Amino acid sequence: MALLVSEIFYSIQGESSYAGRPCAFVRLSGCNLRCSYCDAKYAYTGGKEMVPDEVIGAIRAYGCPLVEVTGGEPLLQAETPRLIEEFVGLGLTVLVETNGSQDISFLSPGATAIVDFKCPSSDAAWANDMENIGRLRPQDELKFVVGNREDYDFAVNLLAEHPQPGRAVHFQPVFGLMHPKTLAGWILDDRLPVRLSLQLHKYIWHHKARGV
Image (tube, rainbow, N blue to C red; front, side, top):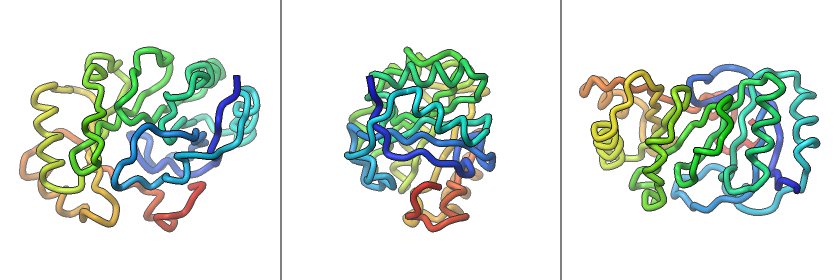
């Protein structure tokens, strides 16, 4: 079976604990959500059909040990688990960016899931699969995109109900809507054991640039 691929590119990883590292990206097409602040609407539809071996060949051409499978929502496609397993089998460090609405339990144990639980201002918090909290493996990471105080409180309360000691948890301000200084202040005031994530690629290149 083929995958529907929006784009494949080589850039600087802008988010997660791997931020700042060169990374090869596979952005798959299709998403089940329509978040208010989405920066990849072009991946909702369209794309090129590629079999996993073609995708793997394109990624290997970059010679990069770090690869991310993202979207859209990559876990909607039936061939995504096989693609991820193939990358892991090549000895690559594999990140999977997922929107929190899909079951992560079938992901390769050698991959790292970055689960982006949706806060209220996304207009998609209804889709969060809270069972994913119990499916997290030690290497997996959490992300909350924060657009206002309600979002921040939502994330703080979720972490209070489901503590994540030792796990990388990222609070990311909605680019162009919330100033990073505001979110940084809240984190410091509450002494939260989380990481402020600033989407490095949007500061290096234009925030609407594709393929970065």
